[in-house]
Length: 302
Image (cartoon, rainbow, N blue to C red; front, side, top):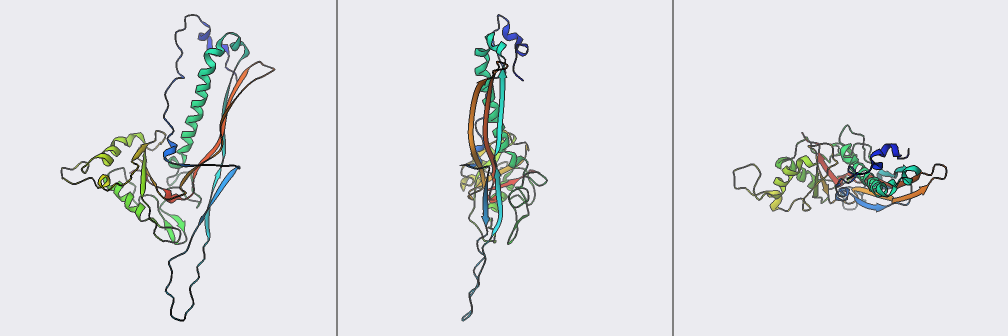
């Protein structure tokens, strides 16, 4: 449906002083703190997890060497989505000089809608990735799970006991990250790099990360998280997270959270011969997802 004069009656009246409602500020791109962006040239991308080998075995004198088999364990698929939005202005609205007043404002509003949609989609793995959620990783279980299946058994990338963000839960998260293992149970040298939090936790995070001493105590103990340089990239607030007490830690494990961009955003404008309406469209194709779930650790909160 095109934007007509009936929808914009005040625009036709003399003495109009201001238009408002389309000039709000918006949050900057917050997905860049979470994802590695790669280009895509097909409908979907696939990345395969390889198992590697288990620990080497003792070879008895005169005995044969033990052979091991590497194998594919699961495949992460990224299916690009087409995101688009459009609006139209009637020929009559254009004739009555509404074009100059509204075109630039509504094209900005269109860009704002496209940008915010991308931010919302960027946190779907976080908002829907807890146990009971709908977002699963390539191994078939939810992104944050205590029972990711591996050749060596099961694997967890969430706290064993769900907890709100505090000194104890943050330290335990970093301990668990340091104990991460690969598909064959071999330890990997992983550490937390950046914490992603909802806006409700920004004050708690600042006290935990920036205070020289331990938070909430009268002792003269140092803040070990700060003094040891843990989580070196600090924390980032994501205003699109829906769980107000969940927190997430991006690790330095490669091939974790990924964003594939198939087609950058493009805009088009054209006139319709039959109606005389002028139509504007914005369109892009992309997908957010995860390959190696060891790239992120989380707690859903208490």
